[in-house]
Every structure is written in structure tokens, then in C-alpha cells.
Amino acid sequence: MRSILIIFLFLTAVMAAGPTRAVAQPATGNGTATVAVDPGSKVMLPFAKGEVITYEGKLSKFISGISVAELTFTVEATADPDQVLVKAEARSKGALLWLLRFSFLQQIDSTIDRDEQFVLATEKHDVQKDRVRNSRADFDYSDRRVTYVESDPNEPMRPPRTIASEISGETHDLVSGIYKLRTLPLEVGKTFELSISDSGLVYQVPVKVTGKEEIKTDIGRVSCFVIEPQVFGPGRLIESEGSMTIWITDDARRIPVRSQVKASIGKLDIRIRSIKSGS
Image 1: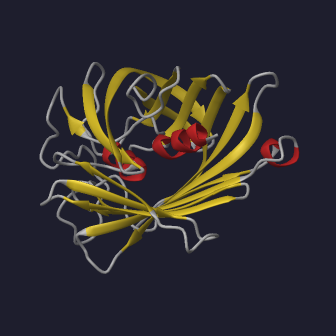
Image 2 (image 1 turned 45 degrees about the vertical axis):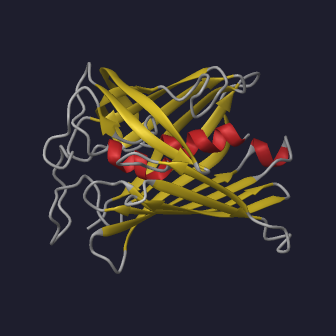
């Protein structure tokens, strides 16, 4: 079940994607290719404070299209104008609750650099049925290190779990990677390599732009780039077999509208349900 949570959060842009270092082609300027402008900002971005995107996840295996989760991403301002806070929440619903008697809630607060979207700090609250964990990851770019500390609020006397890993340059968590993806100069045939950190570990994630499609969504019919992040396999973010495809709009908004994951648990289809634009 943890893999589903990772996919949800890594996803949404639809996740298909992760974080960021362009390999095949450097990002133009600051790595942006869109035009939604946050007033007073130095860089043109496809998102702004106040933006809220909601998604629904449906799982198919023996039964087709069972609703299992909802996901929300919210962009907020911070006291520092050079930073942005993105709040992500994945919550179980439907069949997971009444059929499998399993519930989960994962809340992530990601503080990121506004112009380049690399992560500065990640706070996570993770509930899987009776298991609860709180964690924080701090990214020190001068020391080239991420330090992750996880605690169990139900056992405050237990020593926290700590993991430290080396980082080399721009690094993302599962959330900031999504927003970085939205700023990249997407083009069919390009490949990007992203450095993603989760739970104190760091992974290199190749992301391929494989085509373009027009699809019908709850926010209308949209033309999209088709993206395939390589997150499954030995040494990858998810070590089991599987595949992920993401659809992100080919317009100034660069909205992740759909993600499809095929794995041993079945086929997970995540689709946008609504979007509230920021200002």
C-alpha cells in the first residue's frame, strides 16, 4: 500500500513525473516554459498561490474502476517571497474503507524554492490504519546533504529514526518534483533526469516525453504531452515491476490531468476532478 501513496504523490502532475535535472536539454532560462505570472515575481510560472487541484484514484483488478482515494494539492505563499509552500494530501475513500477495511492519510508540506522548485524542507504526517508516523527532511545544499528524521507520536519515548544521504545539486521531494515538471520545456522525444528524495534516500528518475494525445477530462477536452517516468525496477523509487504514464496539458497551465499506473496490485487510474486557479 505504501507504493500507492508514493505513486499518488509523485504523480500528479500527473505525476508522471518527478523532479528535475534536464539531461537531454537544459531548461530555458530558469527552466520554465509557460506564462501564468505571479504578481511581483521574477519568473513566469504555470501556477500561483491559491491554486488547488483535486484528483480521484480508481483501482482496477478483479473489479473495474473502484474509487480508492482522493488527492489534493494546494499552493500557498510563505513569509519569504522566494519560497512557496505546497500542501499535498492523499486520503483513502470508497472500497478501501468498506471492503478492505484499510484506511490511509498522507499529508505532505513541501517548502520549495519559488523560481527553481527544488525542495528546502519536507514535513510529512503518515497514517496507515493504526500506524502513525511524523517526519521531517531538511535539505542543506551547502553541506550537500539531506537529513530525514521520523518519529512515532504514539511512542514519544522511542528514539527517532534518522537517515542522512548525500545530494548533488538540485533535489526534489515527491511534491516539488511535480511542480518542477510543470515548468520544464516539454517536447516529444526529450528525456529529463530528476533527483528525487523520499524518506532520506535519493533516487535518479529518468522521465521520457513519448508523445501527444487529446483526451477528455472533467475540466474539458485537452491536448496533452504523454510522459513516462521510470519509477519502477531495481534501484528505482519502487523496486517492484510496473509502469507509469502521465498526461500533462500542452498549454501555458501545464496541468497534470491524468496518471495511469500498472503494477501487481492492478491498474491505478488517477484523474483530475477540479482545479481552482491561483492569483
